[in-house]
Image (cartoon, rainbow, N blue to C red):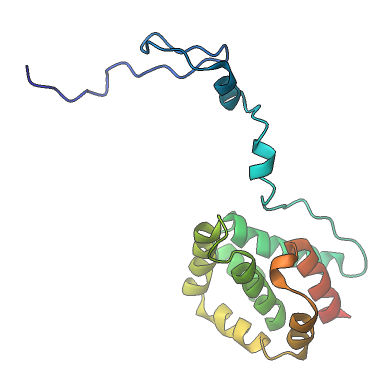
Length: 174
């Protein structure tokens, strides 16, 4: 008898149930401790997600609106929530030095060993490849004396996005 390829109407195996068992198409039981995966109750989930990007940063003070706008632009690129057109609209009127800091932080924070490197760098590339003027703007911002001060004082990888925006906008606007 020759094997046949399953068609799309063939019954699919049933996933594990929260009781630790499986559907009728399997002839073994899933251990009870595996049931927590389906329920999202696995104790180790917190350890794996500690590096998740935090978009819930609050800014206050004199330049809170500017900080929120800059943070929103950075978040849009990192999370992929903003299309390149949206990122361009947010960053085109921005200070070249701010654009430099945003791009540099993304590159340094999401270094090649970071688990989200490929996705985040792809998002950044989509923006910079489609809007070369932003790349030129960031290059112009690199020459600002604030960059030398910042890079002599801070390390990109050790700062959250919110901390970066807070420090940079304060320095640029102050």
